[in-house]
Image (cartoon, rainbow, N blue to C red; front, side):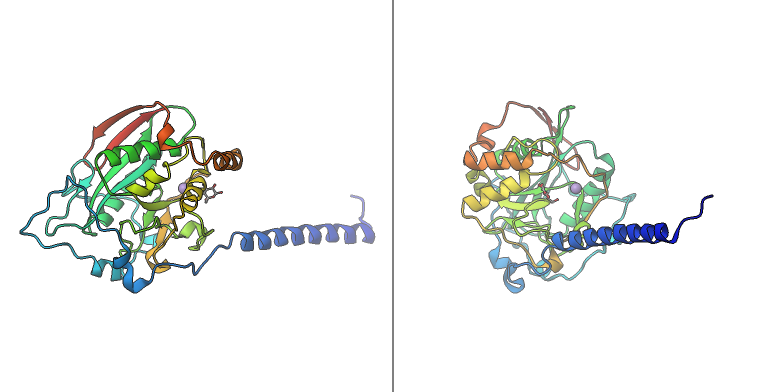
Length: 326
Ligand code: BGC
Ligand code: MN
């Protein structure tokens, strides 16, 4: 083997040091660019209940003999699950009280009716955790709710905006006053994170473990969002033009701002979520362009221009399936 000269060795060392320095600098910059907001502005913790939108669906039968449900203790609850404690299996899950994914508290009259809408395709292992976990979580909240699982049943590129619009249309038909748009891979960790709408659109998933429990940016509404049915209609729902991963939520956020609607949040210690692991889906490289075009067109595309899709509804004990073929 030829012997390296001192000069070559020094040069090699320099190249290696240089490469390490660049990599370190890159990681350093990345950390700060994606750091996000730890103490984001939020609704005052002691008056949360006064900020909530108390409204039930006309179909909900209220009983004179029962008292109104109480939410005070739930909102003040400090009980939380750590993300590593989230069960991966629910062998002894009971579906007690559930019919077509609908639940009505037994001992009191709820003050909230909430439609929970989940856009879905091909994530069976996540769904197996999501459904029992969410029903266990939600049945403790004294709310009337219905879970709509909107499944894209074709091979075309996933279109979350269309699915959420179709799900919202079904929930609006059932006259739910409040819609919660929820990702199937997100599980709430804090018992005090009441699934209810506020006067303004409410972003529930402000603190996700995947993002080191910080809010990536203040206009983010992706993940879990609770919005009054009236507001969803007013902003014309989601754009139908985003195919693949990303963009539709940022576009929706712009729609809210454009309608002078603020995004509100609960404090951090009530807004924690864990994200179930999955492969990163291919990002839609066109999303920024579509967003720019949508702004120019003033959100004309949306619920009002929903493309013709085949929709069928089917009842399941744990959810109402809204099957969609684009
Ligand atoms: C995407 C959003 C996504 C966010 C956070 C953005 O780049 O456009 O759809 O919710 O990142 O992951
Ligand atoms: Mn995800």
